[in-house]
Length: 102
Ligand code: H2B
Image 1: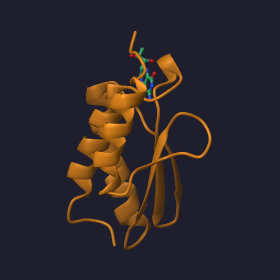
Image 2: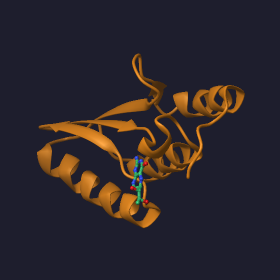
Image 3: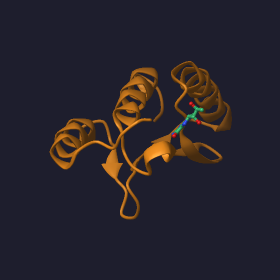
Image 4: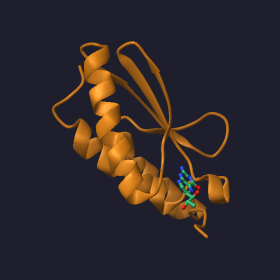
């Protein structure tokens, strides 16, 4: 069972990820990032890459794609909050997003 990050750790890890556009959600214990792509194909291609990565990690994003925008929410359902898995997935997504999007 994955456990929730403790408040101090959570604060520090989120602070580090704010530089790449992640922020804590207003509601619920989650983090969110919005990405803008050139067009739908680029957004969908990126989602396909993230999907394969998420499968490998066995940790999956909640997301919403509207045309060329993508909103990714990370949270761990097993513990109803942010866990280290969300941090790892966020970093991996940032790695894939480097040099992409608009
Ligand atoms: N993804 C997310 N975001 N939260 C989870 O709790 C979770 C998951 N649990 N992917 C995994 C799959 C779990 O259901 C499997 C059985 O490991």
